[in-house]
Amino acid sequence: MATATPSSRTADRERADRIYFTLAALLGGIVIVYFACVPLLGGNLAFHFYLMLWITMASGFNVSSGFSGYMPFGYVAFYGVGAFTTAILVKKVGMPVLATLPLAGLAGLILALLFAPTLRLSGIYFAIVSLALAAICRLVITNMPETITGGSFGLQLGSHAEPVLSFYVMMVVMLVALGTILWLSRSRLGKALRAVRDDAEAADMMGINIARVRLQGWLIAAFFPAVCGGVEAWYTNVVDTETAFNTLITAKTVIYAVAGGLGTVTGPVVGAIAMVWLDELIWRRFPLLNLLILGLATVLLVLFLPRGIVGTVLRWRPGWRRFVP
Amino acid sequence: MPDDIVMELRQVSVAYHGDIRILQELSLAVRAGKITGIIGPNGAGKSTALKTLYGLLRPIEGDVLIDGAVVTGLPPWRFIDRGIAMVPQNRSLFNELSVEDNLRLACWSFRRDRARVEAALERAYTQFPILKERRKQPAGAMSGGQQRFLELGRALALKPRVVLLDEPTAMIAPRLSTEIYEFIHGLPAQGITVVLVDQNVRQCVRIADHLYVLELGRNKVDGATADFAQDEQLRNLIAEWVDYRIDA
Image (cartoon, rainbow over the protein chains, first blue to last red):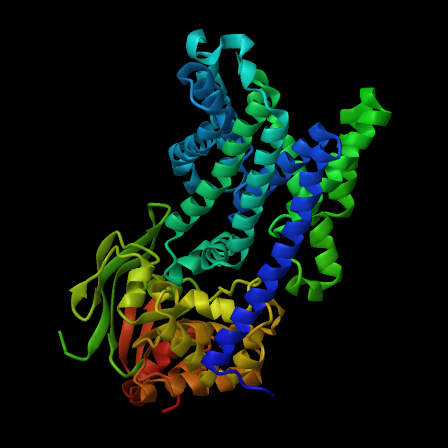
């Protein structure tokens, strides 16, 4: 049997990390080329824009539910606040759209900090409270003066619409999100998050500061949907509370993430690709029955593949875990 | 306070849900370089006493002391800094993570000190070579005995001066249990003080230097194990409480 000295163990880990990140960079390169070609070759811009948006949303949600064990049913709150931050800063303050996007993310972080006390809760209690907080966010924005939020008509960004540029920005946001989650899955923080999720008392005994680790995961999970909200506001050129805080956004995010498999980096990506594609297919063939059939497909998926697509494949082929992040 | 006492519960009361008292004015002292055994019938508060010693439970009355200093209310991770480690009764491994990642998480409080982390891993691998063989496997894929070795390895990797063990051989095959008790018996020789809570009274009495017998969360009797063996009355009491007769 080969023995492992500290230096050979470190070398082992570094080699594994190098292979892992090289593969990720290679895949990332393919994804960049594919999406970059969509506007250039006249592909379906809207479909691919929303595909990237859902990949980002589902991946962000995965940090909260897959890594940290929190199921935020009010996840749309971050998205909605991000969308309104961008819209208000562009329309009322006159800032350039691109400059507002980091601020949309910052608004998501601030909201996450405000919600942080709810991290003391767990399971269904956390899920319900987060749903209630999202409803409160929506009500607060709805009841703000019309001069700021545009009231029931919402805010129109007018001449700022740049579908192709916003498409590429969405691509960058998606890549940054995937890179962050890929790093998280290999990092000490990611492992600590999983440890806290699986057994908080044991993690506490290890000396892991549970509250801090949970908060860090929560902030990462909140940042990306807020930026997505900002980019989507730019892409569609209009923001109103009805759509920006629509619970269907949370529902789709949860479905896509669960369909792929929580707790892995690839799960939500595969889930989003499969379900967005299925959604599009059903929409084209059966426009009136779209939600019904999609709901049925989701029920079947959860019944027969409860661990999601990637989770089930990894259960059948546990050896693949080494290559599938 | 005698110099050799490293940890102490002083008149400690602990309650669950506010008013259900599990420990009532319990006092116990852990002597350096010795094995302190805590025995008693089910519900006596043995595990609760250990959790209180490690800061997992906060007493409503009384104090926890380390080296004579009051540490009541400190979180468990502050105990690690003071050289205390604990192996709880229930499995506390992170099953999805590899054996090595489990060991690395034990080094969380000094995670940025790479050399110290590597030394801690080496210590665990030296104590339990099986962990080195399986270091890349998920912890959940190992057998019950190997998982227990990993938990012990994780605690000892931190080079503690006191290790608190709660039912270290619960649900472990008898042959492996004997191996584990022999290992625990050898810890004082490595300079590690042991506090052992065990339902296996026979083994606990065999390896402990000092015994505490608890009943309904209170001290019933305590003393050097050798004294128990020589006192017929004490032996009868022990036999009555924990259904085990200490050999004279």
